[in-house]
Length: 118
Image 1 (spheres, helix red, strand yellow):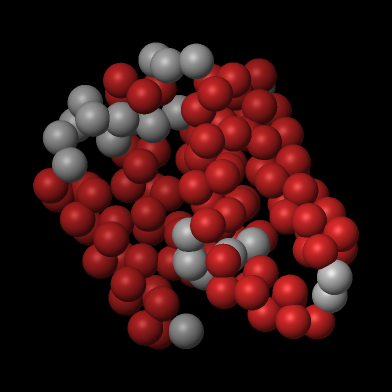
Image 2 (cartoon, helix red, strand yellow):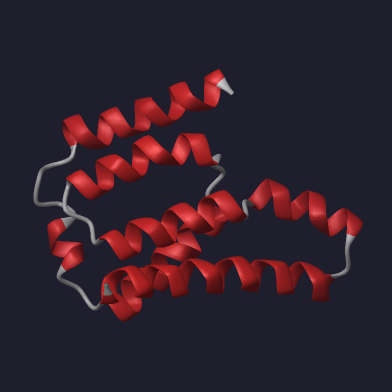
């Protein structure tokens, strides 16, 4: 648990300390109908734990990224990861694996859009 937290804090610190303030504000002004699903896709293929994602999400939000996109990335990253999908493929057939990834992706997108609507 501790190594993952250290990794998350390190990535969050790099984002917070070295990424310019307006870097993600330009993304926040983009079309959220594209930004939220793209964030979810990126999150699905990231190998992060939920504890690692908290400092990263905090830094992204502090730099001006839209909260819906941040939550979409967080939920998708915590819900599924590439190594997890590789392990699941050894146990399940493609239809079940596809359904799992789709449910995680859809949940991340729906939550991201709901946050932006509130």
